[in-house]
Image (cartoon, rainbow, N blue to C red; front, side, top):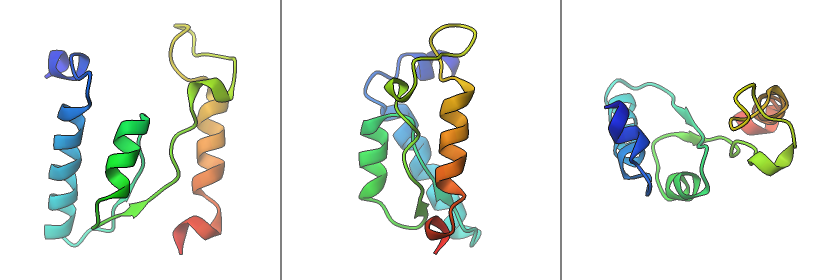
Amino acid sequence: VKQKIVDDEHNEYSMLYFEKIIDFCKTEKIDLYCSAWTKNEYEYLKHKDGFHLLPAFPTLDSFEERADDGYHPHEKHYRLFVDEITTTSNFL
């Protein structure tokens, strides 16, 4: 599974799992809120139903800072994302 995630250049693996999660939540009558890290995944979600679409995760170029490994988003990215999804308008 780890290698499939790493090799998922066109986000096919992750999109398959979006479908499985969406179907599960529909079956179990669970309110689902989704977002995505990549533009392709987010655009894909825009054309789906059965969940509430949250704002997209901030792009890496939103801030210069990176996580300790130098590649992943910094805490600033996560704080901005939380600020965006916790506004009242996003839950109407």
